[in-house]
Length: 496
Image 1: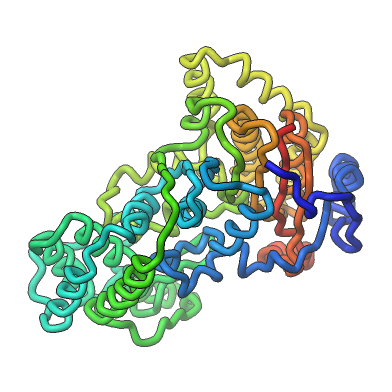
Image 2: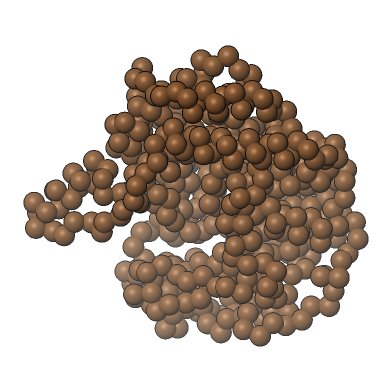
């Protein structure tokens, strides 16, 4: 694998570094400032990597990639740029340990590159299973289904939507009936299993569009027409309180309208893709928690890693994708699924006991302890934990679970970094997309702390690409500590 010009002599980038991390100088930020000085020459503001490219937005309208709106993913354009710059060739194998809607795997498939992904959410596995078969669908069969869909009308559904508590009243009665009618209609069609799977994906993909909900950061926002919103506001008014801020999604499409539109777009995509000739390659998406899957993969296998882990921002994917998970029948299993995520929410409990058991079964406890020592002896990690503790004692953090979340987040990421080092071959490049965060007035340099931990585990830091458009912190943070522009970065490391 060749080393490309982008990894030439590092140049310092004005404005990319910070001068302070603790609002008002309440806590020591010496270790964080030391990170800024140590890696300043790696920071590079690069206009090629806009927030649109390093997010789902650029996938809208793309063949296959736009079939499901997975907001937490990154774009096919980003993966394509990194594959080219890392010098990955046909026949090589790349890894995405936080595969999401499988963008990395799909790009690899179209370029004749082998790929392995690891992903926990069932939503993403259905997306991959349906999208990866774009070359196998019978276009005539799908066009016939579309014609029948247009000509028919929904009847009475024999069952209700399989709600969990958080999704109750997400649809009007008519919409809920129609969703379940078409779900059963698809299952009873005399068509191939591949086409049925694609139609299940489409039904899942339109849930938000036809519902009273909207994905917004770490929550589902609820339209004022939802029964639960009306009941909550009635209770607030009775208590002399103001109703919650009104959210109005405007006119909602019917289930039939949404299905017809989505299926029409997908048929056109499939027809276009089936006219193209892609080199042969193999991809696999493994279901599970990457913390437990990675240690069992073979060493020295991967030519590159392109990924974006859940950010340390309290976003709970089991809530954001509650409608989709409920539709897939996750039911009471949503709590276990939530606990299995990388520790990025205040509800996540420590996985260290389970991980110790897992590494013991593999005969690799010494490896686990070595990684833990690297994290626990990192000065910036220690400083951040102390600073958050001080902020909690001062009443400046609203949930003590944030302290546990941040500590566990970096411990778990370090274990991932160590396993990536083991499973990558010499010369492999690793790219991580992540956001810096701020809690209680304390800025956490996720990009440079991750780079420092990776360096301590054997990787050679190469670049930290900083997006030109910085993100702001939450309104709560701004109200108390002022606005801070936080870096969104792509960290690039290399296995020597």
